[in-house]
Image (cartoon, rainbow, N blue to C red; front, side, top):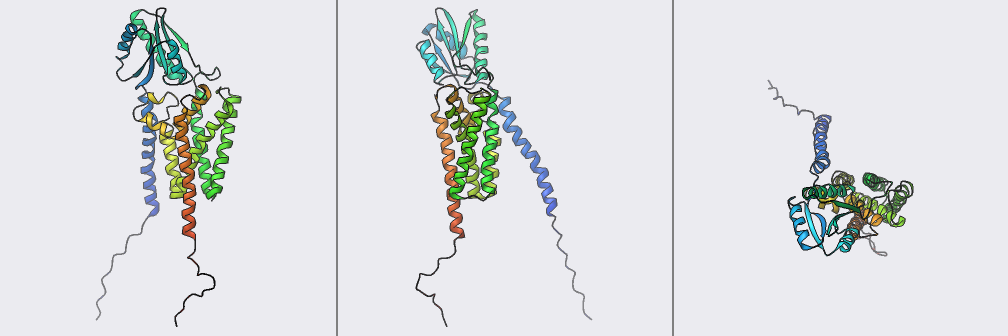
Amino acid sequence: MSTPSATRAEPRPTHPHGRRMVAVVVMAPLLAALALWAFAWPAARTAPRDLPLGVAGPATATSQLEQRLARHEGAFEIHRYADAAAARDAVEDRTVYGAIVVSAQGSELLTASAASPFVAQLLQQTVTAQAGETGAQVRTVDVVPAPEADPRGSALNGSVLPLALAGIAAGSAVTLAGLRGLRAVGALAGAAALVGLAAAAISHSWLDALTGNWWAEAGAFALSTLAVSAAVAGLAALLGQAGIAIAAGTVMLIGNPFSGAATAPQMLPEPVGTIGQWLPPGAGTTLLRSVSFFDGAAATGPLLTLTWWAVLGLGAVLLGNALRTRAEAPDAAPAPGREPLTVG
């Protein structure tokens, strides 16, 4: 009589949909927390941190002024100038955001609302409050004013997100359309150029929010877009579609809130302001302010940053294409005129 074989336990069926549901439930709050941290934390901690501020006038008067400013520990980075003309030049060259000039006629605050309306207002409030302690009157002079059509810089600040989205869309479209190599590079460059022209036409010609050289502004818009689109397409060429998510997430969740477009990089917690200027949104905003309001002053740094992103991204597109072509190439065929060796 045969013994019935032991019954083996059947493996439990897997439930991929259940795992996906858990992943969605877990990822949603994580992404929300990351977005809140990236956007809300810098905004909640907005305050001057080593904000460049000029001081000009007799040593006896400026020393007392510097002592009062030193009460705001770590808030201001003081630059000393011989006279009002030197201080004004520093404001126009974007070396400082403003300058306090002390003379026999009284005190004068030089600001540049075009550099940051938020900072100009902050300096006016700070200096006026300090002057109230001594009973002195301070006259404010806006050396480089913001455009009358956009006194708060809202249009310029509002351009950061659309340009980032345009770059992400262009890089994703090139990747998903299957463009490779030089064709991809040409498509990215062409799309960025058209975005630059359209953005300049809207911001400068229609809204009057920019006042500089039209073509320089279009070039700044285009380079900012190309820096993002090239990074998206380049990472996608090397890593696949995961590269799109990495590049897009970096630009949207780090680059945008860390750009300091609404205030200034020195108004954000460290090292947020510095990191923001290393990424395309922050560098693009700084470059656009320089070419539009300051005749290109202090434009070299952000220009090099954006160029670096664009060159590396386009290089990654070409490298990814070369690696893929090599991987798809068939084995080397035998030399002409020679038959492959057979046995038997």
